[in-house]
Amino acid sequence: MRGYAHFGLPRSPIKNVHHGFPPGFSLLGDHFSPILALLAPLYRLWDDPRTLLVVQAALFACGVPIVRRVADRCFAGSSPRTRRYAADLAGLVHALAWPLLTASRRGFHEVAFAVPLLLLMFERGLARRHRGVLLCAALLCCTKEDLGFVVGVYGVVLAVRGRRARDRATTATGAALALLGPAASLAAIGWVLPAMGGVPGYYWSYDRLGPDAGAAVAHVAAHPWLPLTVAADPPVKLALVAWLFGTLLLLPLGSATAWCALPLIAERVLSDNPNHWPVLYHYDAFVWPVLLVAAVETAGRLHRGERRRRRERPERRAVRRWAPAAAVLCLAAALPTGLAGLVSPGAWTPSPRARALADAAARVPSGAFIAADNNVAPRLTARARVVIADPVPRGADYVLLRTDELTYPFDSTAGQRAHVALLLAHGYQRIWQRDGVVLLHRTGPVQAVPGVRPPGAPARPLRERPPARGGWNIFHG
Image (cartoon, rainbow, N blue to C red; front, side, top):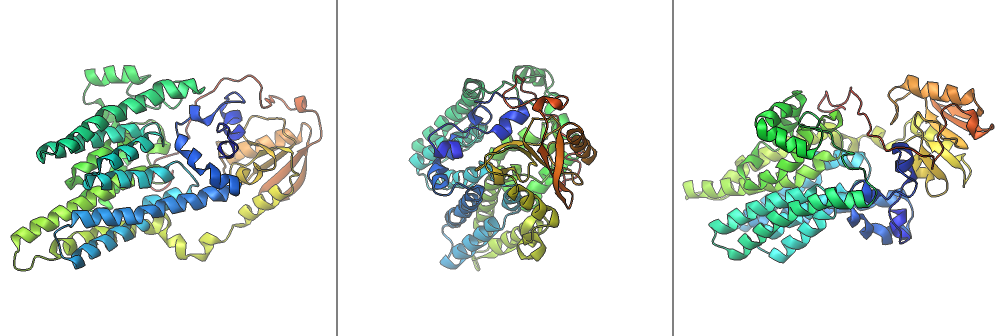
């Protein structure tokens, strides 16, 4: 964001050095998210990572009025009281949604834009505002390289709905999205990312299907049941799907909009990376707008069917029967995933270890070169040259690291302590320590540390090996 704010490309030494990318590598070669440039003016006003957290919260909150409009359209024809009831309930479920809570706890991500844009695209589609649909679709393709596939599926849904309603404009809009959405994703993945310095296949994690996309397509064509086999092994993948749909009482399954979740869910359940399976990170927030809109559409359809069957008391029967149950279930699911933390003082009080990290960071002089713990690195990027502390010595002036709690990208706390011991034995001294946090200062030459690889040294980008422990519990990776 700092790069965008100063009219440059988005660059991150934290990302580049750890992953072995060249010093000038742009993050547009990592993920295609040029929409983040829209935040540059705000970051220019307040150059601080908290800007992004505030913006993400605001973008998530923008979904509330959009969801209310979706519910109002799905319950059109009902009494004003019923429409207001449905809108209030849908808005509440979105505002306190467990996928948004888990995403918020993980920091800022481009999903902040994906949530309101997906909701708005679906709302504009219900309103038959085709220009709005096309604009939202274009912005989604600039939010993340894989969202074009979601746009393509929604195009098919729109085209089918338009054909049934004999609405040529809707059919044409759907056909355009069905073609252009996947084309945008394929172009971003196959051409834009490599053109910006990305490594083809860097994030490929589908080796059970094939070594690359082409081989996977051929393999699946020869073995059509293979995706189902992979999607069910290990069983935690089935638990993930059951959780996503079950927390909305399976209501999304009653709407064709739910098909738009297929590319996003398939990306995760077909993946070999255990980090993609648990309900723990930001991935569920991408799926949430699809499932919520599909659930509201189903509730509206059930309500209309109930009205036809019970003409004597048509109002609120289905919305009373289905919607409140789904809302209660969804809000109950939010309790262990973040909602309880909103009213828990402990969730808002920094732990002793967090305070120690912040205090240690304050002791690092401005302009220094530091290898910092992943959790505290953002505090230092505005005034220091920062890379992530990892098992490879970087020759930094300072090293700030935890030793008694696992931190990314180490595999174990023993590895963290061994790294500190290595540095202490080769030209570093401990200048501060508290609550398992240690701050080291280099007093010897850079080359004194065995295996040192300073930033800018020739390196080959390497795919990161996910931890074997990840993903085996649906709540904890």
